[in-house]
Length: 183
Image 1 (tube, rainbow, N blue to C red):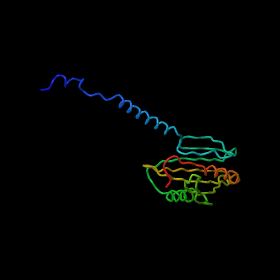
Image 2 (cartoon, helix red, strand yellow):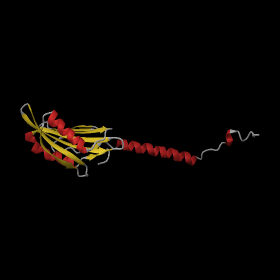
Image 3 (cartoon, one colour):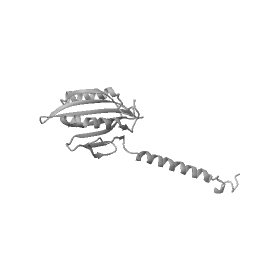
Image 4 (cartoon, one colour):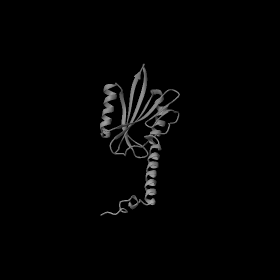
């Protein structure tokens, strides 16, 4: 037989207050850490090159212009499909040369000061009989479930490329990807 005292709510053991405080504290710390991680900024860090003015900045895009309207755009894309850097390099080369009619002038490997490896293209194209240079630098990083692709694109008149190219290269040397890991 059961006694009346063993069935009463008073016989249920209470959770010690210290355990409740510890659980609430742990949840609070996790929430704060998550908020700090989200607030840490965008998907990359990019300094504005000399002679450029920043006109757009979001978590995944950066845009800057010169007084001559030369344009620098840096973008981040996140894809579930994971491919290696040579796959994207071949795809971009074919797209710009075969599909869009650009002339490939130079291409080489590019490395940031932080050690992130990428690939650099220099194309030329004439628009309204004015020659333009189009420089494209591509980086990729691998995340747990996604691949992160970063592109930096400089479009400027050919006469301005020697003036703005070194400043853009200097800024890209300091580029920092904030999603995924190299390799």
